[in-house]
Length: 397
Image 1 (cartoon, rainbow, N blue to C red):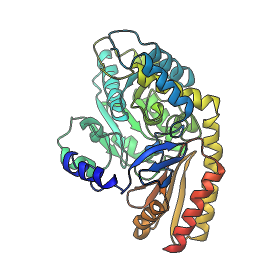
Image 2: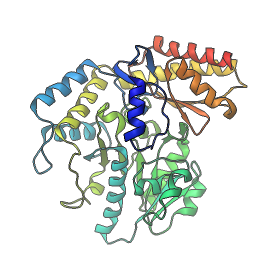
Image 3: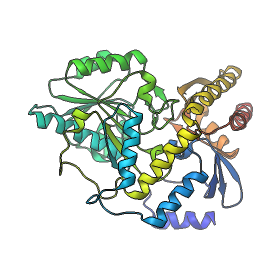
Image 4: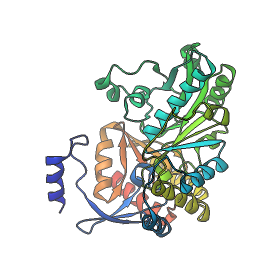
């Protein structure tokens, strides 16, 4: 079957992913994925921080089946019960006052940029510039690529929409130098996932919030990868003790069903009036049923708390491996169950491939960091399975 799928992919699918890892999965359960040849893998990447409640959680599956029996899609021309209820869950659980649903993290960030510009436009203030950080990742649309601080993503798509620029992360001096009277918003990932799980300093985040308040600048926090319990808090900005004017989320919000959200304070959200923004699929009955099920599972099973507890244990055990192999592992970092294991660049690709051979699913960021984002329901026994595999890999190379 695998060879047939590969042949079809090469013939009919645009070559945006190149040669993928040679495996095709048929089903999943919790932390496990089952390949077409019967091999069992442990998903320590969680579909890139998507499968927060694990694969095929019974309650999640039954919730979707129940919704499928009713209806999948209507239209934003009509009221949608699940949409209203999921907006309520997001608002009542966070510092936001309003939510808007779309289909992905990139769309959510696009919506945040539009909202920030609209906010000042409606006030008659000439502010449109968006500042983001080097090494950030905000999506693959033209505007979100313009905000993404990685040249290899940007180079083929220039010229961009005007008004985006990047500055060094964790440098408050860079913020002060970059801001002008045209700056509408600063967008930040408090933990940069795609660049290797790199957290911002707490003091930097606090100063950034204060600076935005003082200079009438909106602070946007991109929580696409860090949201829904990933960092041991429902959202990473809670971990940092700050409240953004706008934050975005996606990935784990739908547990595998595409959905994104733009969440904002009341005054900012009020800038969007009828006709200013919209969506066909965003927040439809099926996607929002998925979001409601994810919220239910997080709360009923204490998964946000488990993320904090198991994340701390996981990093402790990883650091013990680092101490055994300091010449191979340079750093373990992260928060909750978003973890980066930085290894020497000359062995990073080998470590990643050998972990895959041992049926451990991870990703390799920037050619030197193994990224982990497993299900928030992970157990100590499952953590130990990975630790054993990592020790074996370190011994082999």
